[in-house]
Image 1 (cartoon, rainbow, N blue to C red):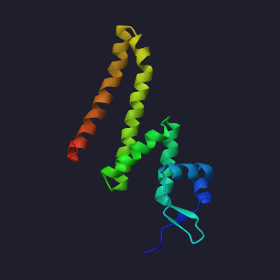
Image 2 (image 1 turned 60 degrees about the vertical axis):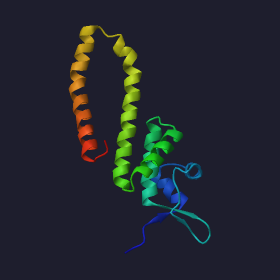
Image 3 (image 1 turned 45 degrees about the horizontal axis):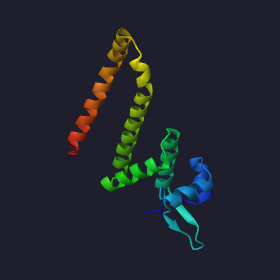
Image 4 (image 1 turned 90 degrees about the vertical axis):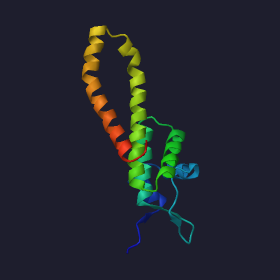
Length: 146
């Protein structure tokens, strides 16, 4: 079995599109951690860290604070050791929170719509929303989560 690829900070920063200083900061915050250190004490990061770093960058672009990201990521790590499953569920949770924020942003506009206009908007929105919520409930019940 071959050894997994490990990257020094400079390589990781180029692949993730962030500065080495950002990687240092995220490491000091505990958002990411090196896989191991070399004999000369260089930090080496794994592919999983690269994926995690890209996820952090995306969440930052979606307007999440680093504290929110850290709390959510550490919460999901405790739930499951299955990184892929917990990663996907975490992304889903964060996406739902983002959608909730967006709904709150447009709520004042929706409240100003005339009843006929509001009915037309909700007529198009509600079936998709209901289907999404139903699918999530089936997923959660299937997994014995609820």
